[in-house]
Image (tube, rainbow, N blue to C red):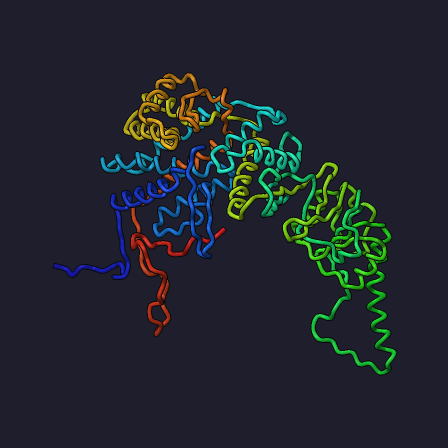
Length: 557
């Protein structure tokens, strides 16, 4: 008998075959179960302690998963899903995970029956194509300028969030903000850059009702010399610089030998004249407000305040860009090159106000601003963070609609319609793929079912009634009212979802399920070579040994 040949090192663990499939499916289902209760308007919140000891209280799928530190590789790839979803369309982060978990759950039965994973994947992909086709069929185009419809849409997105109880407040903010910064690219395309041009400023204190979208920009800065400079200017002329208004210092130590006493004064004089020159070049344009991203020396400050000009220094680059967009100024790199066209005159009011114990400068009442600040007020930090996350989602939804103005019914109605259509179609799928295809159709029901569960109604009865309504592809708009669990027509209740979000959800979920099903081997072990003489370094305690294949922790966003 030959001695067994060792290919893998002792320290490596290898699992293969159906064992891996089951492990992956279990892990994915575990992730889906964490998130499941946060779907729908009656959703629960999760409280997470992050590494720094801070608290995150949220029910945004992505925010929860971002904080979790998982050991299982399959679970990690599930987390990537909600991240992609968040970056792509901004909403539906919870639905993606629930749907993918359900897809894997129904596949488990087939793997036990020794189906080959590629067969299942093929069936799933076919189901995905047909599902998208159904979406196209029931989608309903809307008019972006019709404020009421837009409100209804954004509200149904936020209805599932914590701020749902404040009704139209957040929805209004989101729509105002996104319509402000939308830029027409021509050919009917709209570009809405949420990240760059919408700034969310959180100021603790006051009530949520005080939150508003400013027709302009707000920055967390005060003027340089509060006593001497004006703090309120009507129709200011604004100049934006990104150069320092102070004497240029040498790069490293510079030695100057002075022979005569007077030379020292000449040196000082030169510095003063240099700064005076700079200021004069700026003052030629009679600005009321000079904002620089770099430093501003005392002397420059003196010259400016003597001319009655307010100055703000050390501004963030991003804030500077926003101000430029809002009031129509151009950011200038050298004062010599200032032109009349660089002066921003679009703002109606510059004012410094005090909130809590900080000063904020407002540049507001702009004519046609292309950037804006959303000012959030609220009782506590946690509350504000949650409101900000919800606002991000709402703005993403508004952006999606501006980009692709098509609607689908919410409340699980879309998923039920897709499911019914796929069930009918499955009879025409031939061969072995028919069963997984049908199972995929059933998996889509996870979303309405979870909605019903979170409302606390009788799930089986509700689902049966819904099946009856959707049986022969009519009543595409009937779904669950997430607040009461009653079966209603989504059009009357104005519960909508944007087409982009739904399509992206389905694609991401099914592709991920296929990817995880195709894994049939996990090899895990110590990857890094250790330096000789160094003992094993104490790492953080391992929870699961299962698949430490990718040991890099998830990189924080």
